[in-house]
Image 1: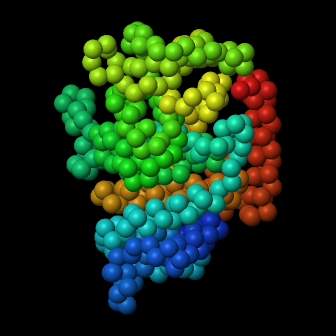
Image 2: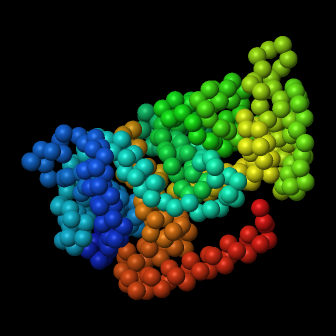
Image 3: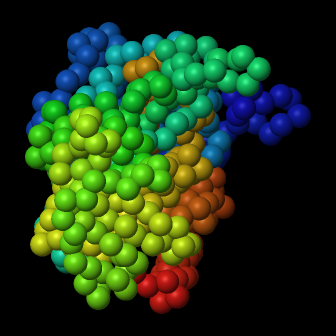
Amino acid sequence: MPALRNKSNPPFTAKDLRSLKLLARFREVLDDVLVQQQAPIHRSFADPKRHLHLGDYLSLFLLGLFNPIARTVRGLALASSLPKVCAQLGVTKVSLGSFSETQQLVEPALLEHLFTSLAGELPDLKKLPPSLHAQRWMARDSSLFPALPRMAWALYGGGREGFKNNAVRLHVSFDLLKDAPARIQVTPGKTCERKTLRAEVDAKPGGAYVGDRYFGEAYQFFAQLSAKNCRYLIRLIDHGIEPTVEEEIPVTAQDAQSGIERQAWVRLGAEGRNLSERLRYIWLRGITGELLHLATNLPPEELRASDAALLYKNRWQVEYFFRWVKCLMGCGHWLAESPRGVSNQLYLALIGALLLQLDLGRRPSKRVWELFQWYQVGMLDEAELAEQLTQQLAREDQARAKKTKAYPN
């Protein structure tokens, strides 16, 4: 760990840490949210005797997620004593104890305001055809992040050889037009995904969601979404049991080209028992030959079967996003361990992701992220970074164009 280097290692200096301009942009957005949206702030930050202010704490925390060197609380506390770090970030020297206890004072609702503000600035990337722009489709999913054994609040279940398994679950409503998260929720790992989505639609009715098989396990869940005026497209688990067909729906030539084999109005469940609401059932043959079963409450005139197939294909964007967050943003390496601290870390990681996406016009790849980190440790200056970024993004555009040509929608 950088803060605990032994005598054989080179000294820890200010050259090891170079803040991104994105951190200055973060402070601008934070100040705007605090002034205009009247976000909640703990009264402790108004105490004139307090040295570690809200913006300083959050900037140092975000630096720990961005920088390849200062990856621990001790490392960040030491970094705050370096004159150049203080000058560039506008922070003062922070003690280890003060940095640790501040996690309990930051309201996650504040970061939610900040996250929402940045997400609203992202442009639509138009990856979906115009016929799917009428609804703001969200890919809904969650992912587990391993927690430390002492984070008892995150108990998930039994692990190997009887050891308890702790995990944090990040729930995301992922905007398919923006290719970015729109809303998130952080819970202990064992929290039900359907329950969390119900809480979201209870607070904000409406919306359109694309979900995987877990959301289709309980048939009454479909009616609960419809009751909140939600549109949905959810994959079903194939139990080998045919649904109760009420009316067949014709399959067009365009639908057939997209892999649609059949569609019908059906009710799910066993005869004589409580059946599901009347929904549209779509049989889709995937590119690997697997037969997928999709359910939606939208009629063909509102959602063509070919568009439903494309929507489900694009649902995988959220899977790529989770992999990106875990591999590049350092989530899972906890700088805070309380429920509130973990929520704040995940919010800050996603805020950092949005800042990068706003700066580049896309979510950075691993190669782009490495260029940023080489810049931070002084191996590239700003001119060289700009040149390398231009070349790398051009290569990625060419690779993406080849892939699109080889595997068209």
